[in-house]
Image (cartoon, rainbow, N blue to C red):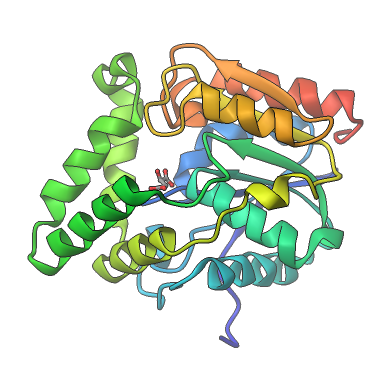
Amino acid sequence: MGTMPPFQLLGARGPVLGLIHGFPLDATLWDEQRALTSHLRLLTFDLPGFGAHRAATPATDLAAFAEHVRAVLDAAGVERVILGGLSMGGYIAFECWRRFPQRIEALLLCDTRAEADGDEARANRARGLAAMREGRRTELLEGMFDKLLAPQSRAAGRPAAATRAMMHRASDAAISAALAALRDRADATPTLATITVPTLIVCGEEDALTPPPIARAMHEAIRGSELALVADAGHLAPLEQPLAFNAAVARWLATHHLAR
Ligand code: MLT
């Protein structure tokens, strides 16, 4: 607290698209979205304990993550943002909407879900926390890696290497704290009906963690939302199929006059 959180703000003019990364990843998840800076400015940042911000004290609940996002907006001088998040980043975006909706101009929900963890997911978090306590971090991360990417992206060089690099940069403390925060998060389903801003939901057709039926359910629950399914992508659609992902986002921004 007190110190300015690190961030990158790219692009010369236009509205700001702020993007929150997933778990256990970092801001480089969004490297391919730099192409969108012909339409707007792009704000990316590492959550505390992840990426280049790995020495920071990790957030232990969604409220702390959302307050980190608010601190980044303040530090970057951004009053209103088109707020996007992937998976855990989406859970955090819902919490931001609950806390400071007046600062959110539109929502971009990528490969995420509204529901809280069920029994099976909670048991999985407990297994993850045990692995971290017992020094089996690599085993835990490799198990996650297998579920993040579509098979064809796992075979491709760049998405696989970028994903592994992000996972390996996360601090032990951040991984453990996030596992507990994700396990204990509240159900965001009641939040969906409160969303009144333009919303785009994007999901990889081969997302094994938050598959298309989950995206369709959110689409039905958020009034006026749009849904884009991305072919040949798993859970990390913006990294796996950046051209298709960026095209869907650019189309949506143009429809709602959100870009210049
Ligand atoms: C993520 O990509 O952020 C994770 O899949 C979120 C989760 O484990 O619930």
